[in-house]
Image (cartoon, rainbow, N blue to C red; front, top):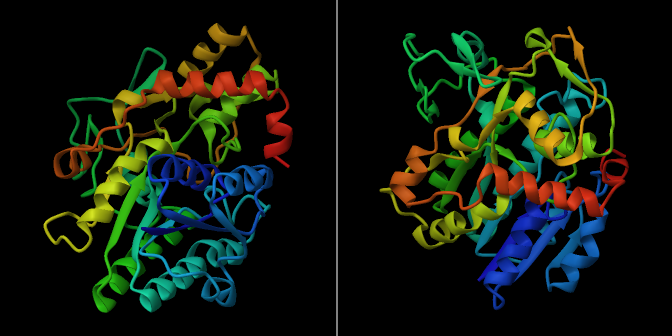
Length: 356
């Protein structure tokens, strides 16, 4: 089997590349990365030492993609993954579109040319914001949770957000690039006869993640807490009650293996939520309590700032992945946080590297 991973030196891409090499030593794994993410270069030599053929190139460049060797499957793990991209003053909307949408077009042209199957790693942020922010929430054990007796929007329940929930705008500029990528991928697959699987993932987290508050919030919070960096509860009254779910990318591997084998199986849904669900979710306040028990106290300030696209509660319902693929993550939230904390203690200046 020949597998191509885009964004191979990022956290998700590098984790999957290592897992594939360890589980399938006879597979050829090639990766593409432009090394633009601060810290991503630290993964370059270790991946090559494992036998991953890492190509330094830019997914936005058609000629760079055209020069890649043929593969049976592509895992698209390359993206600007910040929901504030295009509005935070650090990246422009055009840069976001070039990274997340034009890059997808180039991947799809590669798949068309080589007949490759595609696994597109998408996001929970494709789901419509208004219905999520309008939920009636209560506070339990320091975290928001939906009031059980309300009239939920179609596709949302106390178990989380399902695939049937609306993806109507607004979803954020970032979310719209991923949603457009999903639509293009499915259309290309249908038109040119190659398999496409879209995995909408919850928040990724684990050791070695390049923690950033707009992307890897779990890893960022643990590292920042241990390094005694200033932290803030932003929005929603400054309570820290906002909730997200958590998933370690290594838990994607068993699902990917099944998707590779299934290929064009029409009985399987092409879009699924892939996450730890409610059971692997936590609020910032709960995360702070865990960190304080592990590292000791750290001051957290309160900010009245209200940021665009912030959502108080978002946890994916992975029931479809469980019922159709018999997939469940092996690593629980506590396992993931412990892994990050252990890594943080051995890499005390990690945020200086990963924040640039």
